[in-house]
Length: 216
Image (tube, rainbow, N blue to C red; front, side, top):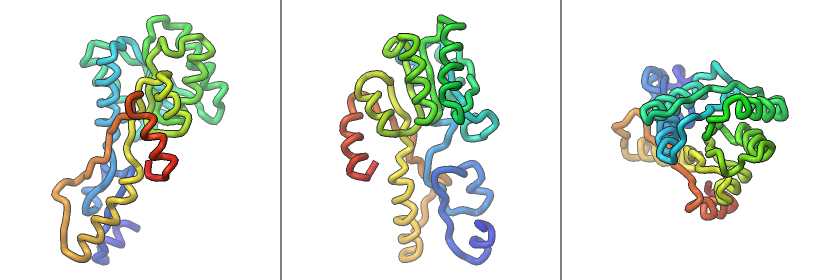
C-alpha cells in the first residue's frame, strides 16, 4: 500500500486522481489536475461563449471526482449569471443516455450549453444534438479526449475539450522520482498541475496529429 511504501522510506508520487488525499498520505507531490478547478475553468469558457442555461451530464452521481467537475462548472457559470442543471445518465445504456439528454432539451427550450464529464458521455450528447437538429446551435464541451471528441472539436461541433494531459501525467513522475533519487530534488507544490488545458477548433487538428503519434 501507499502508506507501507512511505513508512519504508520509499518516495511516492501520485498521478491522475487522488490530489485531495495526497498530502495527508505523505506523498511527495501529486501530478494531475484538480477536478473542481478544471470544471470551473470549463464554466468560465462556456459563460464567455454566451451560454446562459446549461446541463452538466453526470454519468455517476456520487463519484467525488465527477461531482467536483460539475460543482466547479456550476460555480463558474453562476458567477457569470448563468444557470446549470445536473443531469444524471447511465452510460451502460448509451441509447437511454441519449434519450434522457434529448428529453431534457425538449423540456427546457432555454438550454444552450452542455458539458459532459468524459468522451463516453460526449457521444450520446452529440447524438442527442443531431437527433434534435441542434448540433452547432447548442454549445457542447467535454472533459478529456478521444478521436471522436477531437474530430468534433475540429469540425466545430464541440466548443472545446478539457485536456488534463495524461501523457505528461505519466512522464513527469518518472522525471521527478529520478531527480529525487539522484539529486534529492523535490517540488515545493503539493500538486503539479497538468490541467486544465483546453483543446479548441484552432488547436484540434494539431492535437489529432500528436495523438496519432502517441504523445497526446
